[in-house]
Image 1 (tube, helix red, strand yellow):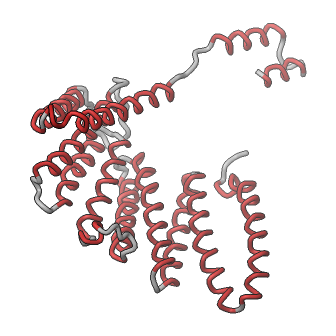
Image 2 (cartoon, one colour):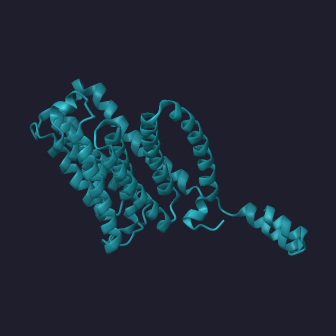
Length: 322
C-alpha cells in the first residue's frame, strides 16, 4: 500500500485506481498455508509422543503384544491410505492432491520406526546386531521417500543411515562408555558425508529427484565439517584435516553460488572461519606468545570487520539482485 500511496502522490495513478488497489488489498485472501503445515507437523509429533507416554505409563496393564498390535495396525493403516492415494512415480517433484497425504505417510514411517525399535528392545529379534534393527526401517524410509516423494521421510532415512553406519563400524564398548572421541567415529562420519554428497551430485546429474539435493547437501556439509573439525581438534595430521575442511567449504561455496543459496554460503564461511581461527591461534602462539597476543587482538578486529563486509556483500557474492 505504501507504493500505491507514493504513486498517487506522484500523480502516476488516479484516486479511483488507488481506491481500487486499497479495496483489493483489504479483501484479498490471506494465506495460512505454512500455519496449517506447522500445525499438522506438530500434530504428528504430539501423536507419536503421546503413544510413547501411553506405553510408558500403562505397560503393565496393556501388555507388550497389545501395544505392538496397536502400533502395527496404525502403521499399516497409514501405509494403506498412502498406497491408495499415491500418484505414479516420477523423477520430477510430485504434488499430491490430498492435503493430509504427506503427514499420514510421515506418521506411518515414524510408527514403523517405533514398532521395530520396540520389537528389538522387548524381544531382541535381531539379537545383538543392533545395526540390523536400524537398517531395516532405514531402507523402508528411503523407499518411501522416493516412492511418495517426501523430503521429511528422506531426512529420516539419512538419519537412520548415519545411525546404522555408527552402530556397524563403532565398537559397542565405545558406545556403552559414551566415548564419541574415537577416530573410528570421525572416519566413518567423513565417509558417510562423502557418500551423502555423492548421492546429491548423482541426483543432480541424472535428474532423479533433483529437489532432494538440498536435503542431501544440508546433511553432508554439516557431517563433513563437524567430523573434520573434530579430527582437527583431537587428533594428529591437523594440516591434512584443515586442508580437507578447506576443500569441503570451497566446494559448498561454489555450490552456494551456483544455487544462489545463502544457507550453504553461510555454513561454509562459518566452518572455514572456525578451522582457520583454530590453526591461526595454534601456530601464532608457537612462534611467540607476546606476538600472539598482539596479532590476536588485530585478528579479532579484522574478523568483526569481515563479518560486517560479508553481510553487506553476500548478495553480490551469490549474484543476487538487490
